[in-house]
Image 1 (cartoon, rainbow, N blue to C red):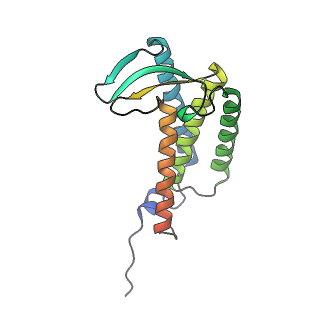
Image 2 (image 1 turned 90 degrees about the horizontal axis):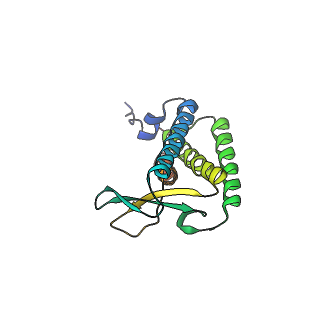
Image 3 (image 1 turned 120 degrees about the vertical axis):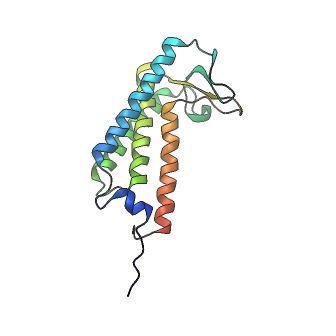
Length: 172
């Protein structure tokens, strides 16, 4: 009698056909709406550079205009970064459209990356800068926004996907 291995988390999470493209696109759209809504709120209710506590001792709000990318890279290269956002968003949409099957972690990674890229891209195209406003209090870390958070979640999901594939190369 052969002993059957239980399915891996990766196989259970993605189902036989994978994650729905519609659900992934819906998640990306939701992320863009949340990102743009939070940035609009910040621009209406905060003064640039003025600190407002959010979670005392952990997170505070401080509105800054970021004309570059993460960690102040490519400062004042908004046009180039806006174009790059557009190219990346189009490439992600093509990937989502053409992929025969996306597992949970890969699908989430693509949705988070698409939502974050479009969220910051809208700022660059519309405002000429990105609205950043979340600042960690206990450590010195660059001020960020919801789109940046989504992009970092995408990296984590890609890593989880890669590790789960490494452990279970057959996807079973």
